[in-house]
Length: 112
Image (cartoon, rainbow, N blue to C red; front, side, top):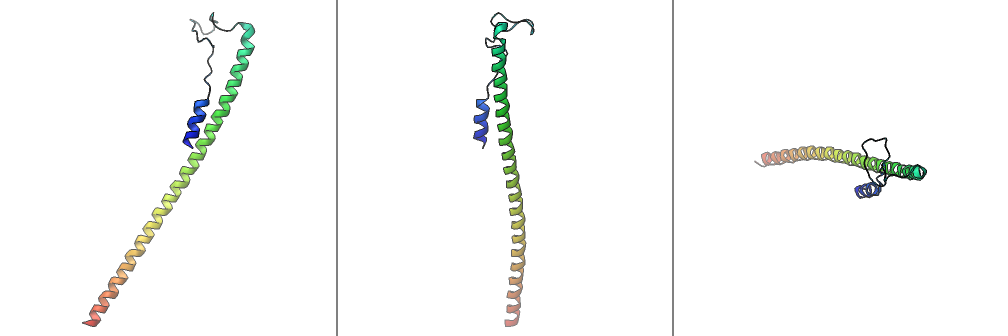
């Protein structure tokens, strides 16, 4: 399950504001290497598509984490039940040992 999470996370695209990666002194100023205004629709479409894909992948990660949490809770419940059963068995074994010991003492007393 955790391998699936790593695979999904590795497939998530990182969307940059500008393909060229140039920085500017003002976040509102378009760097020279940024797409021209006519290309903004293409860039916006790519960002939108990448955002939808990333959202879908994040949903898959959330679903996988939910499954892991459910499995962990089931395992914790089983461990708790096993511990309770072990304690019950231990208590019954002590009672049986006490009964056997008492029976043995009674036979020794009768033989004497």
